Image (tube, rainbow over all chains, first blue to last red; front, side, top):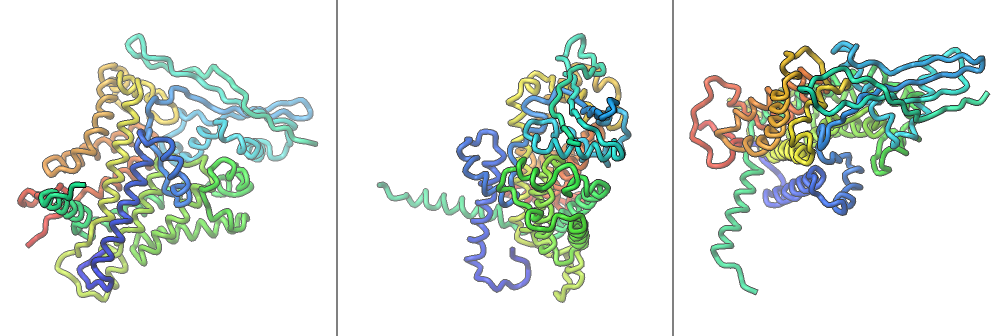
Length: 178
Length: 320
């Protein structure tokens, strides 16, 4: 970059090298962000973007289709004596703006942990819940369930009412040996 | 094969000169400094929110041990945590180093070196636990990289204050190509977002925000008038307006007659979304990115009267 001070490097070589860098960065960013980029091109540039940390992908902000499901996670702890304890992830609507701001990473984690791609993380999640919920009493089994509710399509003047969470899907069971 | 005509050679040469002028137009050094300061402040808020759950998110005793984290993310997504000791003391030392680099970046001491370190640490933390990061963190990462390319010390910095260079009557001007990269990144971001929305029927038929307003995770940060969420007409207008803004901004931001108005719209849009939605620092880092289009003259009142520039609006106007 030139400043008003004197440059030591030859003026000709510096702009050309920088121009190559500019072109390379712009081409990579353009191919990575544009939805029309062919999959073959994405596959070719993906390793470079991942290694350098410059990956971004298309900016699909609530797009093309916004998520239309609310969900919470429930963990059921079953103990050797036959007793049972349950834990649920926070009800976001009941939290204050500050709690939501400070706890943003937690909400992001609960959003992603239920995806099948996150399955390698499920055992550690279950163990983390045991540490939080039942540190002094070891369960023999922990079941993780996602409880969800679909936002209905707009009808009847688009009235919005609280979405009941009435679907359940058990996604992981952790068995703890004696 | 036909040899190029003198006319086409001259046209090509003129085009190359225009492109060179576009990328290498001199820029007020304070623009880079403002972005450095805005980014550093937001990153410090960001990592401060990591601190209470640092062990939970990033240690092997937390929700995602290193071995499992490598199974979730592409193997090319590297992190220094693959080679560092995995104990909690090391994690806390690394976190402390990251915060130190951010503070030094904020005050502008050896800024390029701080920017490199901050970028390496940020990528390492994001690749260590990808389950807690999302779109805004991507933008933090991209802007963090672009900061490395920027001359960050020339104004509003400790290094500038300690510089042996003679003080100037006005801030230095610097080759603006890194700023152009940030401007084009923001433009591509908005264009990508608009295009993605156009592909979705809820955005085309105006119902998209009807669904977004009922997502417990994102909507309802602060109270809104009831007509915003109860009127199909308002919801449709907001839906189409959002998509229209994202298509219009990448074009209008580049022209002098519409630049300031577009910047004003962007500020209103992002602050409005931040008021209504729980998106952490997303809208604030977006505003830091859009700051790349703000010239110091924009902050003076009344705005200086100057001849219309022959090039785009972000070409600085030199005082003579």
